Amino acid sequence: MFSSLSDAALSTLRWWVSWVAAGGSGLGVFCAVLTILTTRETSRRSSIKTDQLEETLVQTRADLLLAEVDAKDAQETARLAHAASQPRTLTPDQRAKLVAAFKGGTKGKIIVKADLGDGEAETYAEQIQNALLEAGAEVVEQGYTGIVTLHHQGGAILIKNPASPPPHTAFVQQCLMQIGLKYVPGNARGAEFPDDALIIWISHK
Image (tube, rainbow, N blue to C red; front, side):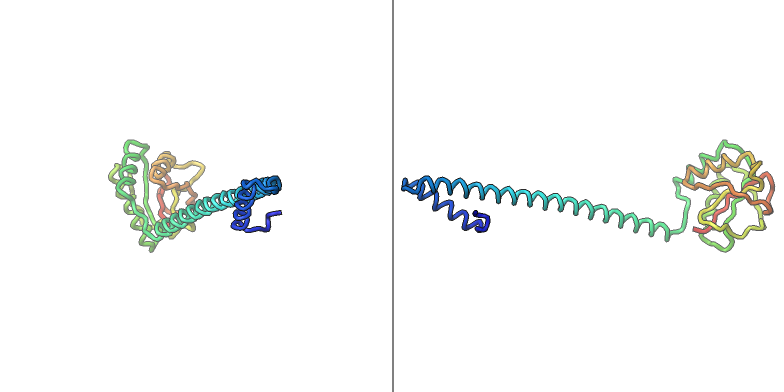
């Protein structure tokens, strides 16, 4: 009945009905009924507004959470892009971990090589080799190996015979994992280096 009235009109009607009812006229009962009806309509509208406000607040919270997630994703993407553009380097903490891991472990010949002509990989390989020398590892020099580059990023541990790897292969793999280098032993059959040695090969980023 009153749903088409504006809030202001409904409030004015309630006031007039209350005033007439208070005057004790013959319209008292009618005015009392109108008062009840207008009060109910006002309560209904108030309830609708409350529900709408709650829905708006819920949607706002959801939008804020999504915006926060998007911001974090953007920051992480930017961080990874920046890291990818920087040359690999053995940090002081990584160097200390690598030296500590190699000391007192299984001895064996280790060759450290990098993709030919890749300055970034060669510099990183030199840093790893220096850390191994500091740890007292048996690092041996090897000139020509017959390998120019690996066909995947990161690096690998190269051995000649996967069926019978050098005894220190697993130990070297575990030591490299201490600094986040998850290098898997790979088959280098036909390459030129001692059978009892392994190569830590640093490939392109």
